[in-house]
Image (cartoon, rainbow, N blue to C red; front, side):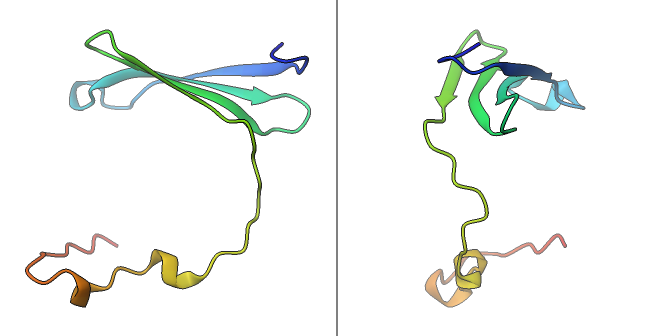
Length: 83
């Protein structure tokens, strides 16, 4: 439990670890709400980065323009569209 809530702990591993700087991602998920609570990234060099989520707001309405890259704003940049 974390702060009175029961959490599920998921350990995630990269499919191609040789190409990654990290070896494990640990994800804590609130069992009742299925909301993420904490993410910890374990790096091969011994470093750890922990993100603690204190507020989670699902399904926020966002303008589509937030996800469009405007090439005109970045002259000289090469864009590789891998879709």
